[in-house]
Length: 193
Ligand code: MN
Image (cartoon, rainbow, N blue to C red; front, side, top):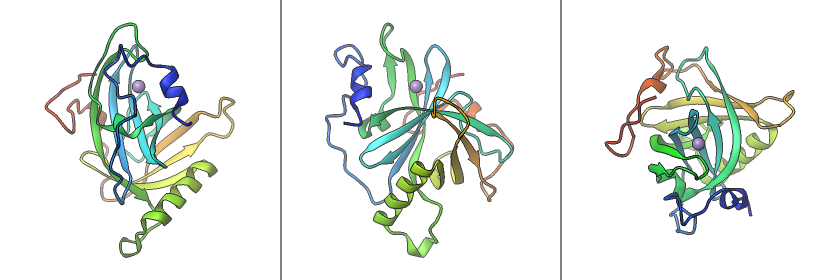
């Protein structure tokens, strides 16, 4: 149901993107993925596994480890879990035409757990509640992105699709703009900005 918009926008005879039919093994901790996407405008697609799909936001400037930066994250349609491994070129004339790499990936969890009390079901509940309330605090365990982050929904924007991604202060925070890193986290692909 939630993938209807994803399917409506794409012709799977013409794009190499996954149709979402393939089974994906669920792990204890949900996955996150950031895809660098050189479409008509370069952007980064930030995706969090929630209830069997990838909740997705387009971040024009990309995620950051700088606690002083607030990055606009525009909510887009849910993607299938299998999209989390997709790299390749969406051909001209298709929705989102251009090159895609997996810029970072790993697992994430609600930031409301101490290390010794993690519970997979509780985690899903906290994540759902955070997304509903428009304030989700979570911890990323990726190759490039690590530590605590917050996604906060902007209440006074009419579309209801504007969120802000913020890096919270911790030992992984740094001033350097890591979105300049143009390498794939899962292959030897490179996608320059
Ligand atoms: Mn995109």
